[in-house]
Each structure stands twice: as structure tokens, then as C-alpha cells.
Length: 98
Image (cartoon, rainbow, N blue to C red; front, side, top):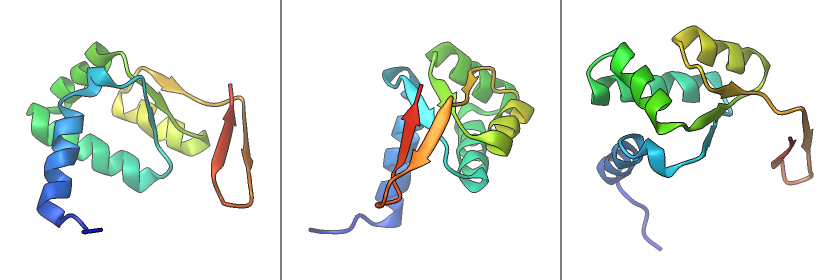
């Protein structure tokens, strides 16, 4: 199995950010992830306002916990959801109960 190079990963990420309407949900697991996604989306869309409009138009639901959800809101993201309950299993996989 080959590992993709950094450029192909970035191109794939860019394609995903430009096709947000194909997704129902984005789950953020860290503040760094939120900053990275918002920064890249702003670069691709040309401005913060255009990035927020793209998120809104796509109708994608953004999920985050606690302070991370607040960080998304501080960016101006309107569709921020927080799970009612989160638990951890042995494999460190987040299980969300809605």
C-alpha cells in the first residue's frame, strides 16, 4: 500500500472543501482541526465571509464538543451541533449518542 504524498493529500482535501454539499456532517475533534479547516476554506473561497457562506449553503452540520463548539461559533459557523452524550470505548473511538 502506497502512502500519498503531501500534495495529493492537500488536493484531495481541497476537493472535499469545495464539495461540502456532498456531506451531511463534519466532526471536529480538535481546535487545531477547526483552525486548519477554517483557514483552508477561507483561502479557497477568497474570504472569511465567503467561507462561512459556503458552509451555510452546503447545509453541512458541524459537530464539536465543549470549547471546540464555541470556537466554531466564534468563527461565525451557524450550524454547530454538540452531541448529547459522548463515551469512549477501548479503541479510543468516540461513540456519539444523539
